[in-house]
Amino acid sequence: MKVNSEGVSSSRVFLPAGQSYANLLDFFASQFPHIEVSEWQARFQEGLVMTLDGRPVAASDRYQANIHLQYFRRLAREPEIPFKESILFQDEHILVADKPHFLPVTPSGLYLHQTLLNRLKKATGIQTLSPIHRIDRDTAGLVIFSLNPNERANYQNLFRDRVVKKVYEAIAPYSEDLSNKLPMTYQCRLEESQHFLQMQEVKGEPNADTYIELIEISKPWARYRLTPGSGKRHQLRCHLNALNIPIKDDQIYPVLTPYQEYDLDFEKPLQLLAKSIYFTDPITQKPREFHSQREIG
Image (cartoon, rainbow, N blue to C red; front, side, top):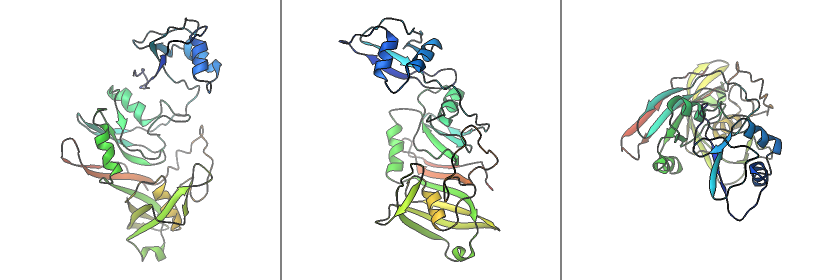
């Protein structure tokens, strides 16, 4: 796997024997029918298809069996995220980043260069970086990356086995009725809704739980500390919304607001922060504790 000057990783494709194509363009168009031929033509023209040693190949080059080629994704236009991430910690095993709001962790949809992963690859030159967990692009705060592929599963298993303690902060409406019940553990069953962007509560055995504390009041808002016991998608957003205190500037709950991908409102970030994380390092056996330097509210 190669990384280009923008920190973007390549993909690799094998050219099998026993097949016949007029040229490389014909092969790529056949191999990836979901991608327009014009897109492959543009990638060849821009030198984004190459041998493993980095030599660009042409769309008209002949098909050669039993070799690998690499190619890079191309985006005609990508939203610019004007906020900077920071690296809080790095050793030979892990890197801990403090992510700003709006920045996706990994490439998806319209985002390729403007992702935390590719920014960090470009900044550090470490091609093997891989996130061992993720947070929503709307959420700011801590994200941990593994440096070594052969150690990655050890760290991912911490999250699978729920032996990592994660603590979030959120700004949401103050509710006097609810404040009398806090701290509390909210439980429910979360499943995907008909709209892919939203989760919904359904009847049945709970599969999501969050410990909720009130830590500061500034009417009409309040600051809450949230400690999830599970890791369902949008869990914290769903739980506060279910308690009638949706997180400030949430564009998904309770009302789904279509994203304006090329005209993001940077003045209204979701008021949710992955503030702290605690675990025992499975490689070094040392206790690890990290805290975001960002603030919300």
